[in-house]
Length: 255
Image 1 (cartoon, rainbow, N blue to C red):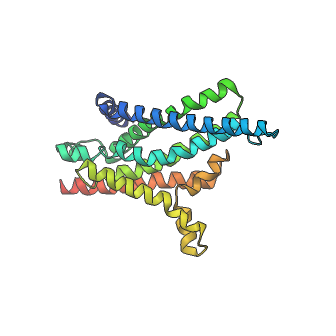
Image 2: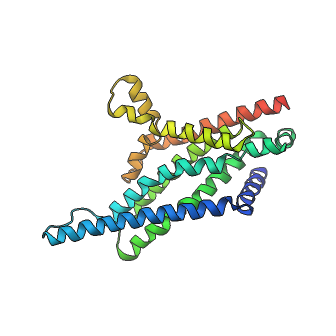
Image 3: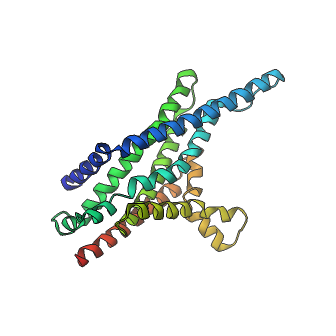
C-alpha cells in the first residue's frame, strides 16, 4: 500500500500544482451554483403562483430541488471525467516516463490503483461543490439527510466506474486530447445506451438498458440502496481497472 500512496500523492500533486484542479473546481462551483439558483427560483415562483390561486404547493421543495440538482451532476461529469483521466497515462507516454513505470519494481496494480484513486479523489472534491448548495437547504429547512447520502454514494460509484474506463483509455494513446475525446465518447455511449429500453422491449434492448450507468442511478436518486445497482457499479470499476492492467502489461512487454 505504500507504493499506492506514493503514486496517489504524486498524482494529486500534479493536479494541484497545475491550473487543472482549480479550473475544474471553479467550473463545477459555477455550474452547480447556477443549477441550484435556477431550481430555487423556479420552485419559489411555482409556490407563489400556487398561493395566489389559493392552492397548496404539493411538492417537498427542498428534497425536490436536491433531487433535480443531483440529476444534473452525472451530465456534468460526462464533461469533467475526461479532463481528469486523459492525462493519467497519456502524459506518461508522451514524456517517456511510462518506460520508467513499466520497468520499475512497482507492480502494475499499484500504479493503476494509485492513479485511479487520485482521479476519484479529484472528482470527489468537485462533487463536494454541489454539497455546498445542499448545505443552504439545511440552513432554512429540514430535508431528510439519509436519501441525500444514498444519492451521493450512487454518484460516487457511477463516477468511479466511468473514471476506471477513462483510466483504461488513457493507456491507449500518448495524446491527451485523443484520450479525452475517446473517454467522453465511451462514457456518453454507456450513459445513453439505456434509452433504447424506453421504446423497445426486445432482449437486446433490455441488455443495453441494463448496461447503462444512468439506469442503475435511478434507485439511488430515490434514496434506495439497491445491492443490484451497487454491484453493477463495482463490476464496472473492476472491468475498467482489469482492462487497464492488461493494457499496461502489453506496454511492459513492448518496452
